Amino acid sequence: MKTLQFKTNINCGGCLKAVTPTLNQQAGAGNWQVDTANSDKILTVTSDKVTAEQVVQAVENAGFKIQAA
Image 1 (cartoon, rainbow, N blue to C red):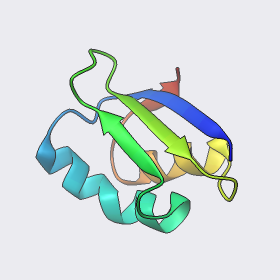
Image 2: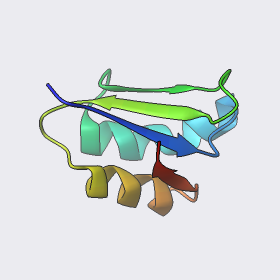
Image 3: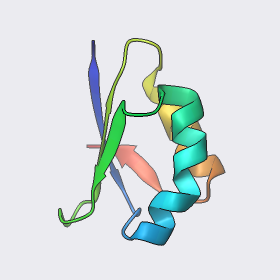
């Protein structure tokens, strides 16, 4: 398993709800989480099936900003 981390602007429950379907489709349910308590809102993805580019595209398609941590 590889672990990818990104800084995002996903900062609340509503944001998580908006991005969940897209990330579940790309990375798989249970393979990602966002630390909304961290000032950088770190998204951590643990999966061998998804690339960094796919994660970035998924988050951007859901309407959020993302960059490598």
